Image (tube, rainbow, N blue to C red):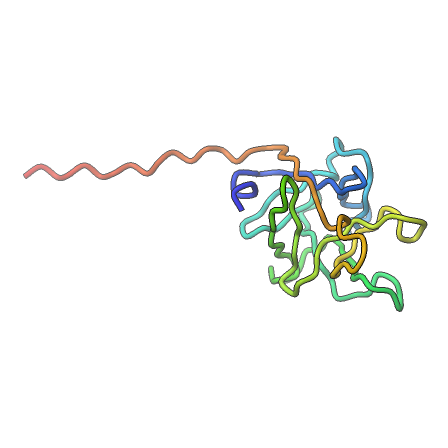
Length: 156
């Protein structure tokens, strides 16, 4: 998606008007209205991978968020190898995007009472389909790459 090809750093804003933040414990993620802080900025890395200010990747884990409830935990990790758990497929929906895991789940901004409030999970939404829509704020653009120079023909 062109949006992420040009972006060096982004912020992900949910329908709650809150941003995905990397928690200070350098593992958890949450939502907060403070989008101007460093923990709300995610560097866009190669495929579509998001790297936090701690150098760790936004990761869709296999762990349940709450026992017996749908939704898997999302954290930021530094995996031994960069695999599909850190890859996100952006799917444009109007002016927003859905961020899909390789296994068909979507990054979801949860609302409601604790422990759901301000949490981030991934799953397939059956209700609250707007909870998987994200606005992407480009914080920093990648530098323009100069066009490749054509070699001039050698003199005869």
